[in-house]
Image (cartoon, rainbow, N blue to C red):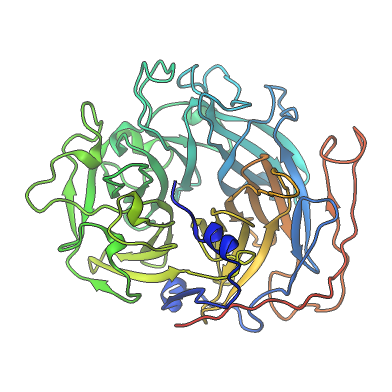
Length: 496
C-alpha cells in the first residue's frame, strides 16, 4: 500500500500550514439555513476515560459496545460498527439501525435469527437499538443477519434503512452458501416485515451507500471497488417508486453514470468544474453473473469510474457523493485526498464541490472523508477514515472546518498509536443528539451539547458515561470529569 499523507508528513516532520480544502461550500447547503456565529465549538478536550474527545460543554454516552450482550439476548453485540440511521419511534423514542461490516474473519458476527438470516455463513448484518428521550437503551436486537460486509447504506422516505453489502463474493467463496453484493431493506420498527430479502434488481456489486430522491423514488448508489477499474455511480429506477416498505422488491432498471469526456473522476482537480449532459447507461447484467458490472461492456463511449466512492446523501434537489481519495500509484488518473460531488438530476449536471487536502498537520482532520450527513441547521458532518488521529468534523457554509469529536481509543501502542475510523454519523429526529460509531473497537456513542449557536458559552461539565465492562471495575458505571486544556484552538487555512 502506498504511503498516505499522514504517514509522509509524520516521517518528514512537516509543520507548515497548508490547504485544508477548497470549493464552493454554499452548494452543499442548498435549501438550508446554515447557523451563524463561530465556526465551531472550541478545542477538543482530552477525555480522561480515553474514549471520546469533545469540545467543552458537550457530553457523551456509550450506548453499545461490541462483546456485550444484546438486550434481546440473541447473542453478543457484533464487531465492526459502520453505517447507521436514526428514525422516529413510538412515544418519542428513537430507533437506530446500525451496520456491521463483518467478513468471515470477524471476531463477533451478527447472531443468526430465524426469519432474519439470509445466508447462515454470513457474519454481517444490522442491529437495531431502541432509545428513550434521554438516550437510555430500552432494547437492542438483530435487524438482519447472514449478510456480508455491511458497510453503509441510507434511509428511505418511508422510514426504512437500506443496508449495503460491500463485496462481490459468490456462493462457494469464503464459505458463503449464497451470492452476496446486494442491498437489503430493514424496517426499524419491525424487522420481520422486511426479513432478509436481497433487492437483487438494485445490482450485485461492492455497494457502499445510497440516497433516495424523495420526489421520484430514484435510488442513487455508490460502489467502493478495491481494484482497477474502480467503482461506478449508479441510479436505480424502481417499478413502484415511493411505494413504501417492500416496494423496491418489485424490481426496476439499473443504470450507471457516464460523464462525457471523463473516464475517471480523479482527473478533475479544479473545484467548481461543471459537466453538463450527464448520461445514464443501462447496466448490461445487474446480477454480474459472469463479469463484475464495472468490467462489463458499456459501448464504445465507455463509462466513468472513480476510486473509493463512499458517502452519499440527498439534499434539496441534488444528490451528493464522496470519493474518499484517489492514488495514481493504485491506478487512478490523478491523486486527491477526498472529493465531494453534486449531481442535479433535473439539469443532468455534475459539479465538483469540495476537494480535501493536502494538510500538513497530521493531528487535524483533512483527508479521506467517508460517511457524511447534514446536521440540523445545515452543517455538514463528515467521518474521517484515514491514518493517524480520526475525527468527526463539520463544514460550515462559509467554508470553515472544525473538529466535533476525536477518537481517543488507542488500539495500537504508546509509541505507535492507532485509532479506528468513525462511521455512521447521524442525528436524532429532533436534532438534539448526534449518534456516531467507532468502527473498532465497535462502540456507539450519543453526543449531546450546545449544537445550536448562541447558547451558553460558559464552563459546563462534561460527563463520560461508560457501560458495565467498558472501564473501571466490572459492573460499575464510571464517570469522568473533563477539564479545558490551556492549549489554544488550532485553526486551519481555508481557500475558497
